[in-house]
Image 1 (cartoon, rainbow, N blue to C red):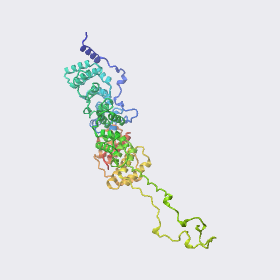
Image 2 (spheres, rainbow, N blue to C red):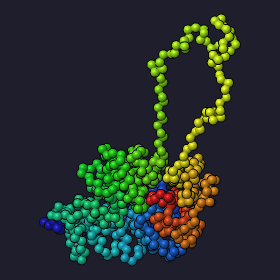
Image 3 (cartoon, rainbow, N blue to C red):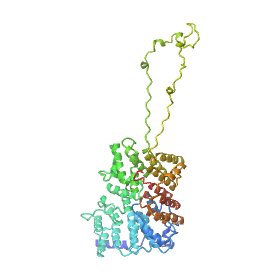
Amino acid sequence: MWSRRALAGAALATLLSCPASAQIEDSWLEQVDPWGISYLGEDEPALPTRMWRGARGEDLLALMQEARTKGLSPAEQILMRRLVLSGGRAPEGEEGNALLAERARIAFELGEAAAAAGQFAELKAPPPGVDAAAMAADLNLVLGNEATACEALNTPNPESEYWPRLRAVCAALAGNTSGAELAMEMAQAQGIEDNWLASAIFAMSGVAPTPPKAKFDSGIGFVMSNRAFLEVTPDAVPADRADIAAAMARRKLTPPDVRVKAAQIAAEAGLIDREAFRIAYNSALAADGFNPRTLLSEAMFAAADGTSTDADTTEAIATALIEAEENPAHFAATASLLRAGMAKLPLGPDTEDTAFLFARANIAAGEFDEAIRWVTPPEPEPEPAAPEPTLEEIGPAPEDATVSGPANLLVPTGITIETGGPVDDTDAEGPSDTLLAVDEIPLEEEAPVAEPPTFEAAWVGALVILADADAGKAAIEAAADQLIAAAQNEDKAEAAARMFALWAAAGTAPPSEARTFLSIYSPVDESSSAPGDAIAIWAAARSGTAAEVVLRTVSLTNGDASELGLADLTLILAALEDIGAEDAARLLALEATGYWKETP
């Protein structure tokens, strides 16, 4: 008779030795250029296919190795995402394999799990110390592609601690917990210690007296924590793995307080849209016993709570937005979530102090009409018309005003009627011949002159024009006129001139009077970089090397384009437009105003 352990060993051997279910046999598939694979959606803009051409491989490699992947603004996220997800022609030179590895690493650090898994799987010569196949398998576990991850066990892989652990995980996922326990014993015999994984496997089999807490630092941790139903706490959300945070945010079984924290990380990284962000928060608000732990959670709770006053809701939303002003990605994610709560609030005494903050938040959320509403004073209510006097208020007519006889008729001077002689001139009631003095002549009331808009209101109107690529000519001219009229001192005039310059750089032509204003009040350029940095970006665009444009731009903007001077920005935005990234250029121009952090 077969023992339980012998059966488990046989099942495990079968699991590890069976051929791959999708063996690649077509030789043409093996010749697919990994550079040509696009990971973008069908409707998503891509960089030009020759994005890697026109630059030496060693120069591109140095730029990629130094590329920023954390703390990116929304515009920088767009650019870096297109860099690693767009398909194109392979770069020239001998650095192709190293560049491919860097491309996969950047995709991984951006949280683009599907692209990173595919790119790591395509690496034929990974750098020393990098187990590309293990990276691909682990990412597939995060993506829910468990069968694909486990199929990797059937191909020759480097000797590393990952593969014995994956064998145990795949046995557990197949329902063979005994085989998983045996695999862990085999791993331990090889000197591989992973007490957490061993405990998680025992928890799956129901024999662990004290199951471990959930852990989400890897694909193995993610899948085993979920399958073993381990206890999850907010501290388990990995701040450095936005891809895992996004998977946790989408999972309905994730505890509410954990789910909202994960959703915040994923939203700031641009990995979930605002609808998925809203769903995560709404599910938490609907859960029994949900306890708001962050300022954003408190704001969402106040906005959804029908018993909160407008003053309380306003204060909660404003506090969450102010906290988010630390960087544009945080501000944009927070604003997108709170836009519905702001829309419910009226412009009045409870909200007048936060109106400009709410207007800026709605620009970040793309709600331009709402942004204008928050800086538009409400129309004053018309004064009620005076009531018509009643007959009682008028009283009886005087006795000498009777109309019973012809004696009371008004008779022109000199006309004789039957009842008497000529009418005395002094009794006539005709118009007086006396002239009025000049100062007695009543003057017609002049229409009241409209006061110029506040600078904050004019600034918001100009931001809307900058953010909206489809703004019409009339709207552009009106916004320019208002901003010029509101710029009443030197600082505001320079801020307005910078705004008009950003309009032009982003592709919105300022009207004539705005161009004149720009030429007079343009601030002295205090660029934070050497002039050659921005010129190099522009020159890369002229050579058609879009990858270099993106890498140099993200390096120079460094998370806050508002710190750059107008000369740098003009060259950068022109370069981005030249490589077909007009949407990213306009968003970067908006970020260059610093709208998300301060009032000019």
